[in-house]
Length: 363
Image 1 (tube, rainbow, N blue to C red):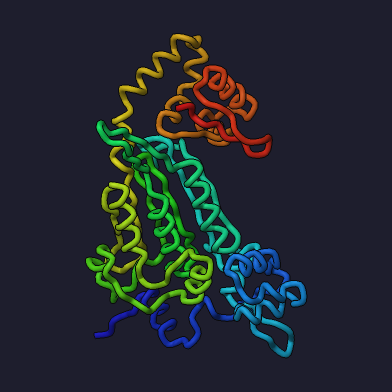
Image 2 (cartoon, rainbow, N blue to C red):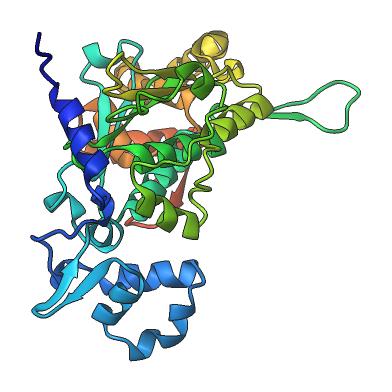
């Protein structure tokens, strides 16, 4: 009886016998014009590379060959996939799915609602990671300080510890297959953050040990990506990612993470849960009180218009005009007027310049 190999299994077998890993193969569609020298220079400086000393005297082609992301040929130069991934302006044009897509749901019913914000992060992999984390740090992460009687030092908690999210995202970017056209996904819900990559862990990995951070693998799907991320301290490349996630969550007093995949290991969903001190129900009494206070100083008409912003600010420390537009479905000018009302009432305060404005909740 013949057994028909599945598409994923065929791809896995092909890669097993291909001497050159996918991230290190030549990309026949890419040219030197697709590489941005500024990204190369930024990376070399940050990694303290010895090539920094010759930046002003070396052509971009020479730098790429020295970094082993391009090959010299009789016809000129061939760019490898790793070169496009790390220094290309638009790697997704050559390797579809080479991007991070973030969806932030603003209501408890999540997928059933159209109340969400969507952002797509493109460019070199290290820039995608940092831009995504910067958005999360600015807009999602919150700190709560709880003073304890008879103790000089207060307890500090974060709704999501930054280091755990950084590690989970770096793992997703490092371990996804760039032969598949699926992006890394970040899905931010009211009470948790899910990070998804395709496919999941290799089938030989014991998932029970994986969830405990006890996998000691030295075989990587994207070895070159790991090497470059390690150069700028985004990856240790020592199979310690899961252990670090677990450790950071324990230090913060957060719930254990969840790691979900299917029998075929088609995907991996890493779920980081919100710290219990930030759960929505813990704010219900305070929220009702704040709403009553505002309803006393605002007309009923203005109050109803501001409710989506007020509710949002009960759960987050800041809000941007873009988020205000998504929440209210109003024009930019109208949202600015709404936010000014809240500023006048000392609910929020403005920070930033004309090009990058954020409104912070007054504690």
